[in-house]
Image 1 (cartoon, helix red, strand yellow):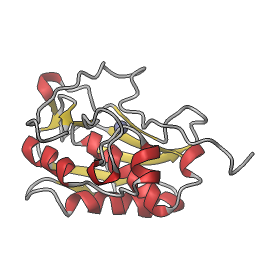
Image 2: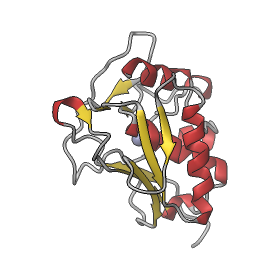
Image 3: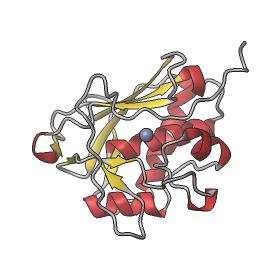
Length: 196
Ligand SMILES: [Zn+2]
Protein backbone atom coordinates (compact mmCIF):
# COMPACT_ATOMS: atom_id res chain seq x y z
CA UNK A 1 0.00 0.00 0.00
CA UNK A 2 1.20 3.44 -0.77
CA UNK A 3 2.59 5.11 2.29
CA UNK A 4 3.32 1.85 4.03
CA UNK A 5 6.45 0.88 2.23
CA UNK A 6 9.12 -0.20 4.61
CA UNK A 7 12.17 1.98 4.37
CA UNK A 8 15.29 0.06 3.70
CA UNK A 9 18.70 0.48 5.12
CA UNK A 10 21.21 0.95 2.49
CA UNK A 11 22.26 3.56 0.07
CA UNK A 12 23.71 1.67 -2.83
CA UNK A 13 27.19 2.66 -3.64
CA UNK A 14 28.68 2.19 -7.02
CA UNK A 15 26.25 -0.39 -8.34
CA UNK A 16 28.56 -3.26 -7.68
CA UNK A 17 26.93 -5.37 -10.36
CA UNK A 18 28.06 -3.08 -13.12
CA UNK A 19 31.23 -1.45 -11.88
CA UNK A 20 34.53 -2.47 -10.43
CA UNK A 21 34.77 -3.90 -6.98
CA UNK A 22 35.09 -1.22 -4.37
CA UNK A 23 38.10 -1.61 -2.20
CA UNK A 24 37.75 0.55 0.89
CA UNK A 25 40.92 2.37 1.74
CA UNK A 26 41.09 3.69 5.24
CA UNK A 27 42.74 7.05 4.96
CA UNK A 28 41.84 8.69 8.20
CA UNK A 29 43.54 8.97 11.52
CA UNK A 30 42.13 7.07 14.45
CA UNK A 31 39.99 10.03 15.44
CA UNK A 32 38.27 10.18 12.10
CA UNK A 33 35.78 7.95 10.40
CA UNK A 34 36.02 8.83 6.75
CA UNK A 35 37.27 6.30 4.26
CA UNK A 36 38.04 6.50 0.56
CA UNK A 37 37.00 4.52 -2.47
CA UNK A 38 40.40 4.83 -4.08
CA UNK A 39 39.26 7.24 -6.78
CA UNK A 40 39.54 11.00 -6.85
CA UNK A 41 39.02 13.65 -9.48
CA UNK A 42 42.10 15.02 -11.17
CA UNK A 43 40.68 18.48 -10.55
CA UNK A 44 38.56 19.42 -7.56
CA UNK A 45 36.31 21.44 -9.82
CA UNK A 46 33.69 18.84 -10.68
CA UNK A 47 30.97 19.81 -13.13
CA UNK A 48 27.43 18.68 -12.39
CA UNK A 49 24.34 18.64 -14.57
CA UNK A 50 21.06 18.42 -12.74
CA UNK A 51 18.54 16.50 -14.84
CA UNK A 52 16.18 15.76 -11.99
CA UNK A 53 12.47 16.14 -12.28
CA UNK A 54 10.87 19.16 -10.66
CA UNK A 55 10.33 17.47 -7.31
CA UNK A 56 14.02 16.62 -6.95
CA UNK A 57 15.92 19.39 -8.65
CA UNK A 58 15.89 21.71 -5.65
CA UNK A 59 17.08 18.98 -3.33
CA UNK A 60 20.04 18.31 -5.59
CA UNK A 61 20.90 22.00 -5.70
CA UNK A 62 20.76 22.12 -1.92
CA UNK A 63 22.98 19.06 -1.64
CA UNK A 64 25.51 20.56 -4.01
CA UNK A 65 25.50 23.85 -2.12
CA UNK A 66 25.91 22.07 1.20
CA UNK A 67 29.16 20.57 0.00
CA UNK A 68 30.32 23.75 -1.71
CA UNK A 69 29.87 25.67 1.52
CA UNK A 70 32.33 23.49 3.39
CA UNK A 71 34.98 22.29 1.01
CA UNK A 72 38.22 24.13 0.60
CA UNK A 73 38.99 26.54 -2.19
CA UNK A 74 39.18 24.87 -5.58
CA UNK A 75 37.06 21.89 -4.55
CA UNK A 76 33.47 22.38 -5.58
CA UNK A 77 30.61 21.25 -7.77
CA UNK A 78 30.08 23.61 -10.68
CA UNK A 79 26.56 23.41 -12.08
CA UNK A 80 26.53 23.29 -15.87
CA UNK A 81 23.91 22.80 -18.54
CA UNK A 82 25.78 20.60 -20.98
CA UNK A 83 28.33 17.84 -20.76
CA UNK A 84 29.31 17.26 -17.16
CA UNK A 85 31.39 15.03 -14.94
CA UNK A 86 28.34 14.15 -12.87
CA UNK A 87 24.72 13.83 -13.91
CA UNK A 88 21.93 13.58 -11.36
CA UNK A 89 18.56 12.04 -12.03
CA UNK A 90 15.64 10.27 -10.39
CA UNK A 91 14.03 6.96 -11.26
CA UNK A 92 11.75 4.43 -9.68
CA UNK A 93 14.14 1.51 -9.29
CA UNK A 94 11.66 -0.41 -7.19
CA UNK A 95 11.93 -2.16 -3.87
CA UNK A 96 15.64 -2.84 -4.11
CA UNK A 97 16.84 -1.82 -0.66
CA UNK A 98 18.56 1.48 -1.43
CA UNK A 99 17.19 4.98 -1.84
CA UNK A 100 20.08 6.42 -3.81
CA UNK A 101 22.96 5.21 -5.88
CA UNK A 102 26.14 6.44 -7.51
CA UNK A 103 27.39 4.74 -10.64
CA UNK A 104 30.71 4.73 -12.47
CA UNK A 105 32.63 6.48 -9.68
CA UNK A 106 35.03 3.63 -9.02
CA UNK A 107 36.50 3.03 -12.44
CA UNK A 108 39.60 5.19 -12.30
CA UNK A 109 42.81 4.01 -13.93
CA UNK A 110 45.68 5.22 -11.81
CA UNK A 111 43.29 6.36 -9.13
CA UNK A 112 42.01 9.45 -10.92
CA UNK A 113 38.69 10.30 -12.50
CA UNK A 114 39.07 12.37 -15.64
CA UNK A 115 37.41 15.77 -15.43
CA UNK A 116 37.34 15.87 -19.22
CA UNK A 117 35.37 12.75 -19.80
CA UNK A 118 34.12 10.81 -16.83
CA UNK A 119 30.39 10.69 -16.37
CA UNK A 120 29.27 9.60 -12.96
CA UNK A 121 25.54 9.22 -12.33
CA UNK A 122 24.00 9.92 -8.93
CA UNK A 123 20.40 8.81 -8.75
CA UNK A 124 17.46 8.94 -6.39
CA UNK A 125 15.35 5.82 -6.16
CA UNK A 126 11.94 7.39 -6.11
CA UNK A 127 10.37 4.17 -4.86
CA UNK A 128 11.55 5.33 -1.43
CA UNK A 129 12.35 8.98 -1.86
CA UNK A 130 8.87 9.66 -3.18
CA UNK A 131 7.83 9.58 0.46
CA UNK A 132 10.65 11.85 1.64
CA UNK A 133 10.45 15.57 2.19
CA UNK A 134 12.85 17.94 0.44
CA UNK A 135 15.36 17.87 3.30
CA UNK A 136 15.42 14.09 3.30
CA UNK A 137 15.91 14.06 -0.45
CA UNK A 138 18.75 16.53 0.03
CA UNK A 139 20.31 14.11 2.49
CA UNK A 140 20.16 11.29 -0.03
CA UNK A 141 21.83 13.31 -2.76
CA UNK A 142 24.40 14.90 -0.45
CA UNK A 143 25.43 11.38 0.59
CA UNK A 144 25.71 10.33 -3.04
CA UNK A 145 27.80 13.39 -3.87
CA UNK A 146 30.15 12.34 -1.09
CA UNK A 147 30.70 9.14 -3.04
CA UNK A 148 31.29 11.23 -6.14
CA UNK A 149 34.16 12.96 -4.35
CA UNK A 150 35.67 9.59 -3.51
CA UNK A 151 34.36 9.00 -0.01
CA UNK A 152 33.31 5.52 0.92
CA UNK A 153 31.03 4.81 3.84
CA UNK A 154 32.33 6.12 7.12
CA UNK A 155 33.87 3.58 9.42
CA UNK A 156 31.48 3.87 12.33
CA UNK A 157 31.20 0.28 13.42
CA UNK A 158 27.86 -0.13 15.12
CA UNK A 159 25.17 2.48 14.70
CA UNK A 160 26.48 5.59 16.48
CA UNK A 161 24.39 8.19 18.27
CA UNK A 162 23.19 10.96 15.98
CA UNK A 163 25.68 13.46 17.36
CA UNK A 164 28.47 11.26 16.04
CA UNK A 165 26.82 10.10 12.84
CA UNK A 166 28.32 11.21 9.55
CA UNK A 167 26.68 12.03 6.27
CA UNK A 168 28.60 9.08 4.85
CA UNK A 169 27.10 6.63 7.33
CA UNK A 170 25.89 3.62 5.42
CA UNK A 171 22.26 3.54 6.57
CA UNK A 172 19.85 6.16 5.36
CA UNK A 173 17.27 5.01 7.88
CA UNK A 174 19.60 6.22 10.60
CA UNK A 175 21.37 9.09 8.89
CA UNK A 176 18.50 10.63 6.98
CA UNK A 177 15.36 9.69 8.88
CA UNK A 178 16.41 9.31 12.52
CA UNK A 179 19.25 11.81 12.68
CA UNK A 180 18.11 14.38 10.08
CA UNK A 181 21.59 14.85 8.65
CA UNK A 182 21.09 16.81 5.47
CA UNK A 183 24.63 17.80 4.55
CA UNK A 184 28.27 16.99 5.24
CA UNK A 185 29.49 17.03 8.80
CA UNK A 186 32.99 17.91 9.92
CA UNK A 187 34.35 14.42 9.38
CA UNK A 188 32.89 14.25 5.89
CA UNK A 189 34.39 17.60 5.00
CA UNK A 190 37.72 16.61 6.50
CA UNK A 191 37.71 13.55 4.30
CA UNK A 192 37.19 15.52 1.11
CA UNK A 193 39.50 18.36 2.07
CA UNK A 194 42.29 15.93 2.86
CA UNK A 195 41.83 14.21 -0.49
CA UNK A 196 42.22 17.22 -2.77
ZN1 LIG B 1 26.44 5.22 0.26
